Image (cartoon, rainbow, N blue to C red):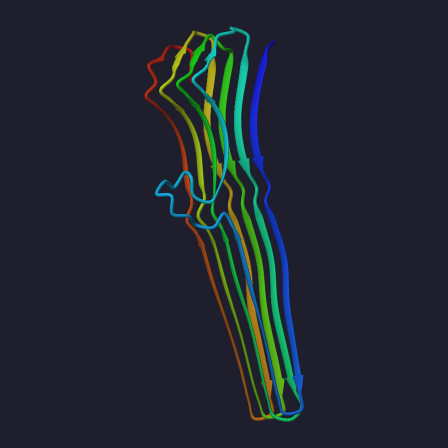
Length: 231
């Protein structure tokens, strides 16, 4: 049996630790900032071309062998693992600690068959998968004999596009099986925390903003023929 297996895979990964420690007899201040972006937002005007793009494509071709099984797959499993931390200790007066993390993933995973004749092939699978993940931990602590203030902030977001498509193609035959699929399993796991301990006053605040704004699309369009036997 003839087999055509076309695949494109991206496994971008960022692992980052940003830490700061401050200590003083009178005043102690520490701060850390972590910025991690995979496929930063672009300005191409075409959302399919912004960020990192992983594409598996058959175009302007003909698959005519009646025994052929064709598979076209695009997979993106980009990930960010981020730790931002800050600790300040003052034995005399005031301590301030702050930690900030900003993490973003914007990718395109696209599997496509276009302008192609598929004649009598026993199987055709077009599949795009996006499994991006963000794991973020932002922690700040401060301790002072008089006053202490600690704050942490975490912003985590994904803006991915996952596309599986057959377009402007001709599929003929009575025994073929066609599958077009797009799957997104993006996940964000985030923890932001702060603790402030002071002899007179202590203050701690933590903020986390997480957003998944992805598009997942599987479609067949502009196909000139789709005869019985395809599903």
